[in-house]
Length: 253
Length: 282
Ligand SMILES: Nc1ncnc2c1ncn2[C@@H]1O[C@H](COP(=O)(O)OP(=O)(O)O)[C@@H](O)[C@H]1O
Ligand SMILES: [Mg+2]
Image: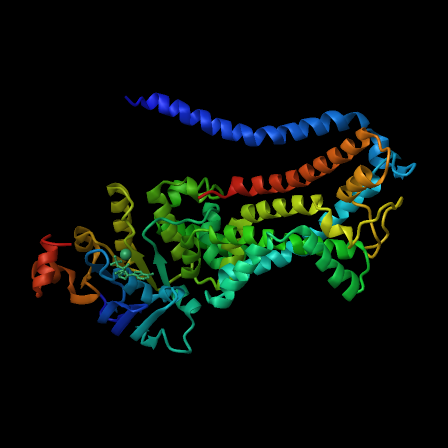
């Protein structure tokens, strides 16, 4: 496991209007590892990872105090470009959300908007991404059919492939298995373990078993605060905080 | 005792009755126009100029005039309406000014058409000195249907799921790229619906063209957009009220042609919309 810090949150506070959703959060995300964020609904998990690729910029009337770094560069500085950041920090959402386009077009979209027009290159990259997302064998003969014909689990892997196609360095997963059946979930988890060799991964989940299975590090959030952050094994076997213990033993949340 | 099955039947009866009350007059209008107008329709009626003080001959100049006017109105109103709708629903900040503009647009859709006619007369005919011409008429009709197109387009744009935009941004697309490649293609069916409504309105109104373009009798086709033209709704008005002893058949036939013309234009838009709907589903 690599100890290089890929992303870093430093004293992050975040407000929706006047409601504070994150309170003074500092957290390191290590390169080539999986960091899980767990906690009950509404504790700010999504808000936190959406700061990492500045998706919260799109919501009006929000305010951030604190800093977020990618490779030691402040991603919220005036010089930083959110569009550029999102190319480097990709995201897979809770609900599979393919565009109403063909499988091929879905994956090529990210390249297209990044002005990569070379046909051969695009095609190679699409195939490569599908293979990495373990979807190639299932769709190789129907690349030009609508992506909406795929099953939920396949759609989610398509979304992962779409994200991989733009070659991000970090991938954020926001409860990627929340709407999937156990078999599809297992496939995605296996995939995440495979992807961490090449990418840095942050995954939000409220399924503790999932965090224990895939994550190297786990952060426990509660009511907008970071209660505990540690190597997954230590956090689950020897939680330092009473609240963490209560949560992982299922006493609340 | 209440019998759910009987309640169901009563409810069905009234719902059906309401639908019938709406459908019946429409059906009757169509039937009457067809039965009275169809006998007068032949090739000469469609392709000839009006003759003998519009009591015989054809209505070709009026058909073409209406086609020109409606096309002109759409060419003018669709791009501007679409751009305004994109601005209002994607870019404009939600502040007092924006809300006032949105409210004004919704209300403009309810302004009586004769008001647009007077407006067109003052602005295009007199102020810009376009005279009574196809240009003035098209612009006036265009302005009249702008609110319809803007309102329908805004609804279509805003109904594109937020999650599509979100993914697009997350892949490193800019705002304009997201609008251009994701939002607009998915909004086209709704935008076309607005265009269809606008088209029908532009083809059928008499008041806006009365002072801005319509010629009482002009037995040749216009040569440029600065010429006057005949138009079907106005021609219908003229032969129904201004010219004595016009055969009833001719009046109904003119109405039938107007009806079919609007239907044909709608059909084109509906076919395009169907093509897009078939491809996009979420
Ligand atoms: N767009 C928003 N506007 C206002 N409040 C929001 C918005 N999104 C989330 N919140 C609030 O912020 C808090 C954290 O939400 P979220 O980050 O979605 O939690 P989680 O992902 O852990 O369930 C919640 O109280 C939620 O109501
Ligand atoms: Mg969430």
